[in-house]
Each structure stands twice: as structure tokens, then as C-alpha cells.
Image 1 (cartoon, helix red, strand yellow):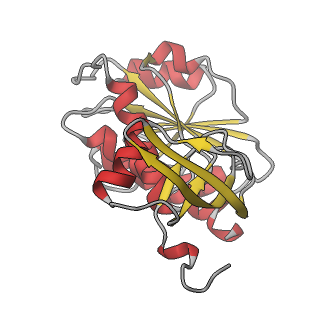
Image 2 (tube, one colour):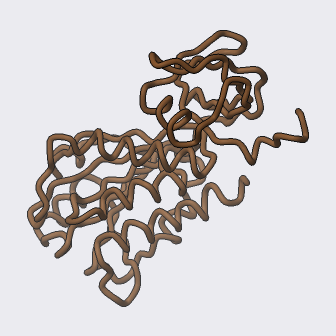
Image 3 (tube, helix red, strand yellow):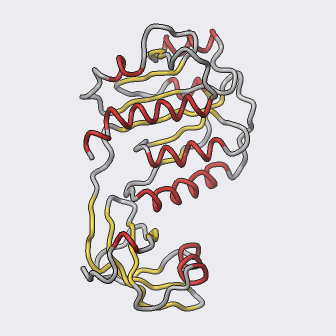
Length: 249
């Protein structure tokens, strides 16, 4: 690689499905960022992500009003799919907290996000919610150097997510006083899929907690204090990242 343009200093662009040596047309959004924001030119080097675990050194071939043509020159890095699969069932939250959690989920190696509607959910899902969250997730992916995208699902009810299959299913419950996340997760090294559920503002009702236990979810405590909904989710993401992914880096 040319020392004059180390990969770390180059901007990363999304190019799903790109392959070596074949011209590729960037999306309108990526093209706009390249030519109108960064003002890059033909011949400049860039980083291209195929969104399937590969990162390429690329080059801008041509910039026109119709779009930007690029080419992948060499494979820089390959990343295996994240293991275990960690699926977070997160509450619909007010303001921009759900977008915040999606951003952190990308950084902390979460595989999939499912927004959940419960008894005490206050926020209402908007029509463009998934599209908005996907955009935030891809922005975070480019920033943190992850190579596999976070999957965003449409909002589902508690009854729907309770039927999901996994090797381990846990949920944060403020009335649980004995089992903590470390104790539950330390025996799960061979598990392929983990479901993690956190509640909305106000937490889960006793009826919901009993229902979740019937469906195989294990309640876990998160300490002596009551955490905000977004804090509880981020706390568990961080613990799982530490236990399963930090040691691999």
C-alpha cells in the first residue's frame, strides 16, 4: 500500500456487493457525500465496504452528475460474522434514545435490534422508524470500522418477541435481586444465539415478568439502583461485549 495514503486516513464508503476490479456505481447518498461534502476527485483513494465482511482499498474512477463510479483495488481486511449472535430487544423510547442505542449496538457488536412494544411503552412507532435507524446504524458502522451491518427489525409486541428461539434468553428486571448478568452469561460460552430484553420507562409489569419467565427468559438484576431505560440497555450491551468480544480483539 502507498504510505502516502494509509487506510486509516481515508474515508469509508458503503458499496454493498462490490467485487475486486469491477467498476461500481455508488448510491446517490454516498456519491453526494463524496463529491459535494468531501470534494474528492477522480483518482483519489477511498475505502469501500461490501457490507458482507470485507473492506477494500478503492479508487474513484469518474464523477459525473449521474453518479460516482469507483473500483475496489485490493482487499484490506476481512471480518468473520459476529459470534455469538446477540439480539437486543429494546423498548421504543422517547426523543432520540432509540437511535442512540442503535449507534451503541453497532459499536458493541450487537447483531440485531428489535424494538419492542410493552404495557408501559409510551413512544409510538413512526412510519419511517426502521429506515431512520438503519441510516444511523450504517453511519456508526463506517465510523467504528465494523464490517457486518446491524440488522434492524420492525417493532414487535412483547408476545411476539417472547416466541423467538435462542440458546439463552434474559431480561432486565428491577425486582430481581439474586441473579446478575455475569453469573448468567459465564456459562454461555458455547451458545450461538443470545436474546437480551430490556424494558421501557416504568419497566415491566409483574404480569409481563411472569409471562417472560414462562417463555424461558431469565430475569437479571442490574444493581441496587433503578436505571433509566436507555442506561439498562447500554449497560447490558457493554457487559456482553466485554465477556464475548473484547477478549477476541
